[in-house]
Image 1 (cartoon, rainbow, N blue to C red):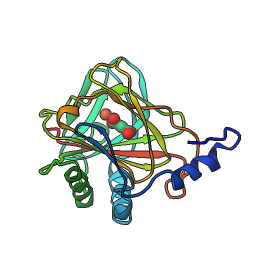
Image 2 (image 1 turned 135 degrees about the vertical axis):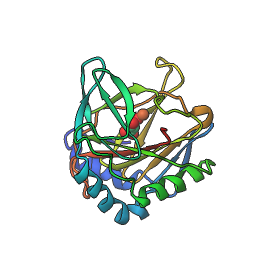
Image 3 (image 1 turned 90 degrees about the horizontal axis):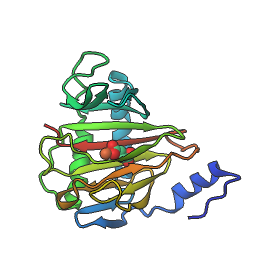
Length: 226
Ligand code: SIN
Ligand code: FE2
């Protein structure tokens, strides 16, 4: 991918529009796929639903057990929401900031996540949690495994919106070499089965302006947590 550092904003936009081929499917593991542009036809329904969820449960920056404030801001919807604070990582039924239950998962979220999971042969995905991550330029997510979910038989379905990001998809040890996969607006990654516990992360977001979402990337990650 060509990037001109003198003008990253224009070129990130350019990349967003020209390097994904909607409908293309890339296998990145035995039971892991990137579905290019899979969410695009759903966005007119999905974005207003996302806005309503974020009204009820606004983004906030959480603190890790180690005392670091995450650069990514989080929210959640569904029966369970993922949270972190000084006492650890966990799923909760209530938003710790408002004391209210997390907003319901909109039907369009669940339908899209299930449709994506089916593409990767996960037929009966019933997500009860959608973690919503907001990256501004510079925000990143270091390599980690998703392992706070009670049962690991369900896949992870992860949707990208807004600015492009470089996703890292690694092995089963933090030190394993990871693949670098650029993710664009509308792309969905599904990983599960033998790949369920692979380390993954996101490199620092590059500056840019997305025509629909502005200077941010929003990632929706669906899980069966309970
Ligand atoms: C996550 O692992 O929770 C987020 C992955 C991403 O932002 O693509
Ligand atoms: Fe994750």
